[in-house]
Length: 131
Image 1 (spheres, rainbow, N blue to C red):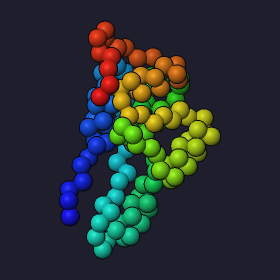
Image 2: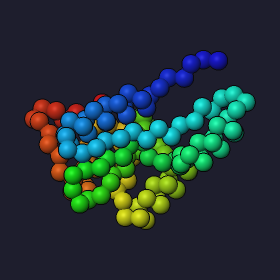
Image 3: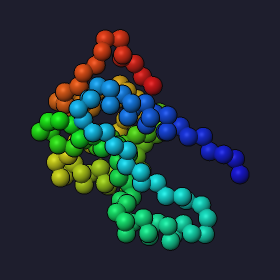
């Protein structure tokens, strides 16, 4: 079986690094919610993970800014990628609860979300660009 190329991982790493740089007082957390999808024990592993609190479709990154805006949720996708049905449902649930949820594929997307949500961040001149 051919090894699958991780197109999302580098984007996610760059997004986390960017957020930690421009929002130094915020807590930026990756929510590890993937399950090994191979092997005989997949169903058992999935059931165990759900009992422990894994929510299928939960956004990849949670940002807890030093402000009254509340937590921010970011779903990271590789360029051209889109959230699946389960992810969209979770995003809709979070929005109904009054939270900000964004799908990002680049640093520019992150910047646009922060600006749209009115979240303060400090960006040095010349940093603008995409991943």
